[in-house]
Image (tube, rainbow over all chains, first blue to last red; front, side):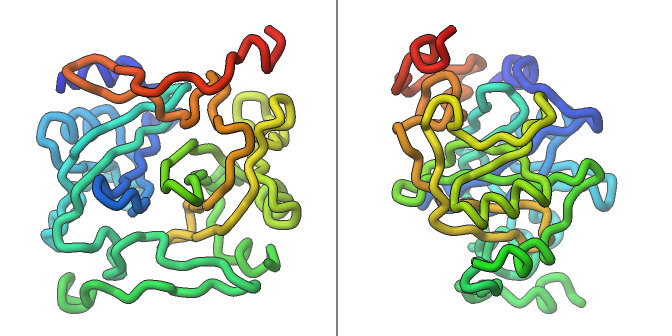
Length: 130
Length: 130
């Protein structure tokens, strides 16, 4: 799609960022929430590969560039006030989270504690070589 | 659940806010993204009713307090780095969006334009008296 039409609808915050939710296009599972600036949003739309702005590292972040677990864009939605995006994506390698879990939201609050209710799909030590 | 255990895991940003995604507990549809501060997160956990911090109005925002379309909390997850929450919710009144649509993400990018692909569930003029 043309990036310009979508970019015109997005309201970036004071840091030039917009929230981007990645949802599994098949299962509807929410895999992660990260942020994009105008350049990485444009790159995402042009390449079809989810490309965020890393706030911690302050650099362009092609999701999966190290692990190979990239995210293919299957669709994108913008919310009513234009400050959040919802991407339907196809997750390569089965896991979005750097911990090896399928979703970054792998911890559920239950009875006052956080419970990990899914197993890791990969071993971060092997994938990232740490 | 005890709010303290969850609050201890959350990393609030420089404005004291954390992103909160509301996902339909039954269908998995992502309904909205908004923000909570520590007080409204605590209130959400204690009351079981989604309570955000309105950045535009700079006030506590019990979702649905005007329209009656409140959101009951059915579960909550925290992401790997603690700066995003994913709530499974039950949406009263069928619509989360102030436009009357079920989801705030009712516009899909397609062929360079944004397409509304769901009908409004209610008439905002009637609900909000405008």
